[in-house]
Length: 314
Image (tube, rainbow, N blue to C red; front, side, top):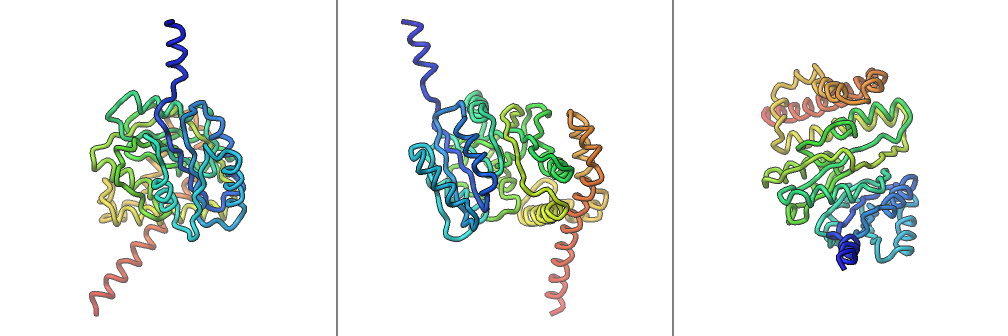
């Protein structure tokens, strides 16, 4: 009798998790994401794929996946692009889960990804969100440099700890904690802004290094690398000039960015991990990327000040 009870308890489903994946022109990578989600050891989930007005074969891939697994996979199709933030908002309206998980259409989640995140969330009732780690799936030096610039806070070698942001490439939120919240409809730091709003509510966020997704970027040339860093510079400017982040004060002393403070912070993080030799190998590219981000920030700040002066002179 006791054995039968234990078996039944082990088989009982946990809380429903809605996994949201915004997709914009992701035909080259989406199949890997879907495959990874279908292999999840955690079975009580629904997958919501949002087509953000793609112009490649993404829409067709989503419809095929929905047709094959209609109970498990839902498709949301936007006639007009609403950005990554808007795509997530559209899916949040459809989500039924007690927990809301996010990943991107260029990742492959590990089979135990969701089970590890859910286990962490259930272990602490006051935990509002958790972030997992990101493994680099790009082999090029440009891919590694962008990995260090973008994901240095969530490399798998870092220890579990409290964090300020749960990047939506690999995150889970307690639905009750984000009730009524929505993402800013932009591709610029929308997950950082979402995390800031959650912390203002008193929510705690924690990093789980063993809940992993592999990030598989398809573009690994200098041009792609340059364009991505300029976009990230836009994102820093957008978020810090509009929202009360702790490091917003730096904008009043913009000359400090000439010291490339983020580069030193990233180097300090990598010193603690097995990635440090690779970081040293790609350091010239990482530094170039940080210079690109900083130059874009200065360009936007300079333009704003020019507009402000022009307005005063009138």
